[in-house]
Image 1: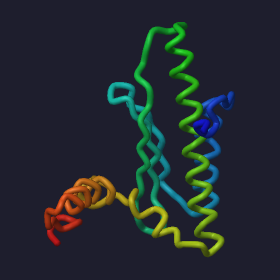
Image 2: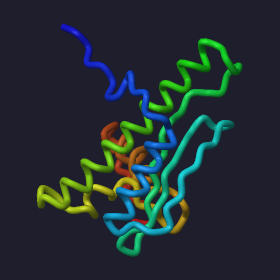
Image 3: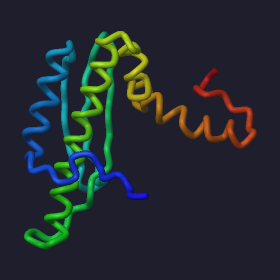
Image 4: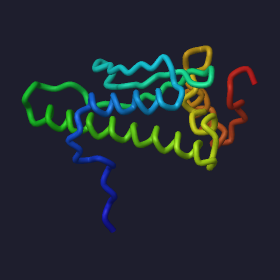
Length: 144
């Protein structure tokens, strides 16, 4: 059995083009206050935006910086291109799923909703859900 290859594994689309497409997609679907950033120190990149009076944040791991011109640098850049293309695909799928009536945008974006404490719903729920599966009776959200 062969292993499936990551989406856009060999893409040559520049990161900036993917970011531009993400921004256009979000704008066309009512998003505002769109921000994209990379934190090389933490090896993450993120897209944050507001939509329907809520804030959302998608954070994805990125490969760590390495020596310019090295083989590792080429691999790092390819991974960055691949991940930005994959994020574009995810956002397109979520928006299309809601637009087509398969689900709702609120349901699709729920894990990425930013709570008043600055954490996402997924940040808060995932460790609590894991504890519940281990038999601990932990509320899924704080203060519940």
